[in-house]
Length: 395
Image (cartoon, rainbow, N blue to C red; front, side, top):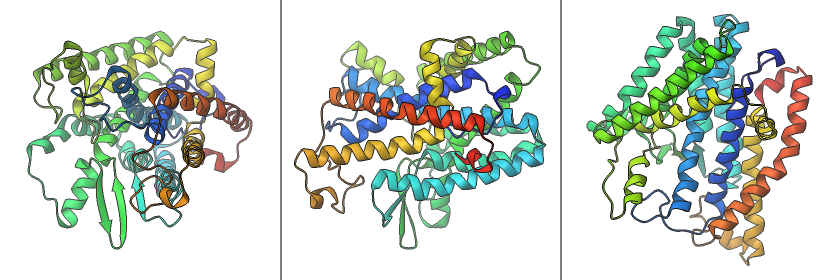
């Protein structure tokens, strides 16, 4: 999601197109978090309904896309840097993202200037993954790919083990491998850890290896398309076999439901926190197929997607503040009070648990958010394309 700076000659439209699509879909889930009034778990196949399920499920493809495409972008950036220079660049960028997550994004999500709770989510995972990639990439693509595959294929072993949960070791294991939304207490400060780092790091490492194989200067477009398509279809086939076996690879097995369509929902409802092997192969497989198809696309819609895909970090930060601001306006417009909106038990200020709107309103607000951010993203993208100040590489 955080693109590495690239000159116009080294931008690849397929990457920007897919990244833009991911950005737009991602906003739908965040609008739903702030505006939807349903108490139903959207991905519970026994309780949900198709519109709600797929509103949530389709956004499962966003975070893996962020990590994988960040790895691809790192490999493209590495074509014009020495391994040492690339490592320094990645490490600095990763550290910057950790600060952004805790200082800027936590405030956007909570609207709590006192930071009673600091949130670690996708930017946190990207930041640490960049730091790890900075350490590994000088060792070469085979090492990066091997570590990525080991983490991808092996981290679900933790589902079969009884791991320590207390003390420093327990905290480390949760943060690194197993967290699914746990509270981490460090001194007097509380952290909400949604993204266990290493399972997500696997996707960035594999994205980096894929980028070196498919986006090298000597690789022809048709060759890249074929490689991406075959890898994507292979990953999707592996997902189907893995999920059908209903064993290793996801902590929540699928089950037969009262209705066939609910059984199908159970089959594709894979675990995101932390990302299971089934989840990763499904989402990255679809991403690879999408990258292959986008290689030669040049339509009004793909150009629209590129506007957001060229400035993903800028868009990501702005959209959270905008969504929460719109939520706050709607809260007061519907009779909410400041005391109700700032109650100490609220994760999102001005968003009580028993407040919200129908799914139709969610989609209307989503469309409004995308429309309001179009021109800021377009203008900032034009500015980045024509200016080379050092600080632009951090935005």
